[in-house]
Length: 540
Image (cartoon, rainbow, N blue to C red; front, side):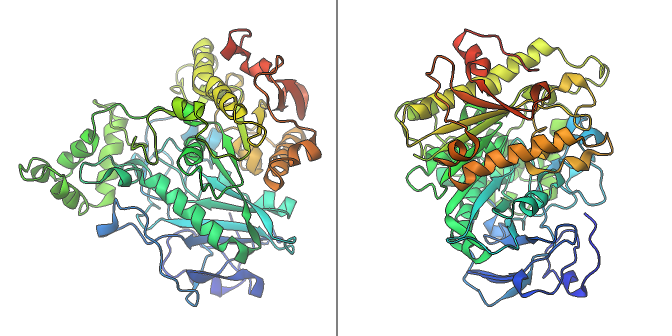
C-alpha cells in the first residue's frame, strides 16, 4: 500500500521490522495500553480509520523462550512506541511448489515477503521469531455507549503459514465503510515453532500456536477499550486452519470463552485431521538433520532436554529451510507439525465432547465456499482449461467441509436456543477471482469478498459492481451477527438460526449465485448430501 509522506515521525519504529508507512500528527492516534503507549497512523486513502499495525501481546519467543508458552509482557504504560509498520510474520517457509495461491491469479493472499517472490523455496524474508503482535483497525467516529463491537481475526494457512501482513486480509476498507466495528488481527506461531510435538516439552506446551491465540485474545479483552472497543462484545473469527483453531478454543476455553460469539469461516474441528505420526518423531528427525544428532542419540537424554536445548541454538531459518525444502522435494516420511492431542487444549474425541455439550454456550456463525477443494488439490499445470477431475473435488468438498459443517451445526442445535447457529454459503464467481470457470467459489475466494479487498485482483480482470454488492452484503450480514449474535441477524437481515432437524434444513443464506447478491435457501440444498437425500452441487 503506497501512502503519501505526511511526517518524518512515522519512520521511527522502535526496531520493529516491516514496511514503512506515514503517520499524521494527531492526539487520536496515540493510545495507552497496559503494556505501552502506541501511536498509529491514518492512511489518506482511508481517512476515517485509525491503524495500529504492530502492538506486542507477549514477550518475543526467542532463545530460551523458544518453544515455551507466550510470556506476559511487564506493565509499562508510559513507554512510547510507534505502531506504523506491520510486524514480521512468524517463521514460515515460502514453498516453491506452484499452486493457485502463489500465482498472479491470487496475488496478495500470502504474507509480505520482502524482495523475494512468492515461490522462493526459502524461509520468508520478512519473518522473525519476534512476531507475537496484534494489529488494530478502529473507526475515527466516536464509539457508542459501551464501545464498538470487535472482530478478532485468526488467520489461516494450514498451520504452516499466515500472519497479519497479508494484503487480502486487510480490513481497512470495511472499517472505513462501516464506522461501527473494530478489527483485531494477530500473528501466532506456526509449523514446528507453533506445534513442535517435542519430547523435551510437557504436554501443556505442545500447542503453542493455540496458546498464542489465547494470549492475544486476552490482550484484546484487557486493552480494546482504549481503542474504543467493548471487551464484552468480541467475536472470535477464524478462517481455514484459523477457523479450526477458533473451534478448538470453543471446546478448550468453553467456561471462559472471552468471545461473545464465534465465526468459523471454511473449517471446523471436524475438518481438521490430527497427526497420526509417532509422538515426537518429526521433531527428532528435524533435530538430527540440523546438527543436533548427538543430543538426540544421547543415552542420558531420555527426557529430551538435551535435544531441546540443542534445537534452541539452531537458527530458525535453518530449521524452516530444512523442513520446507524436504517437503517441496516430496520426501518421505512426510513431516507434519500441527495441533497435538493433549486433552487440555486439543482433545482426542471431539465427537464425544460435542455429544456431551462440552462447547462454549455462545452463538456461532459458520460459512463455507461452494467448491472449496478446487484450489486445494494439486494445481493442474498441464490442464488449466479443463481443470482437475471435478467428481473427486466434489467428494473432497463434502468430506472436508460440507458434512463437518453440518455435524457442527447438529451438535450445537442439541444445546438449545442459547447456542444459535447462523449459516451462509459463498457461491459467487467473478472475473477477477475466476479466470478458470472450474474453480467455482474455491477455498479462500471468500476472503477478498468478506474483507472487501477484491480490488487487489484488478490486474486479472476489473472488479464488477455485482462483486462489490455481494461483498457489502456479506459484510453487513456478518456485522449483524457481530453487533448482536443472538438477535441481530433476525432483526437486521431476516436471517434465522439454522435448525438442522427441520425437514427443509433451516434457513441458509447463499451469496453470489444465479446473479443474486444474496438469497435464502433451504439448508437441505447444501446439507442433504450428508443425510443421503440430496446430491451436492458445487456450482449452484
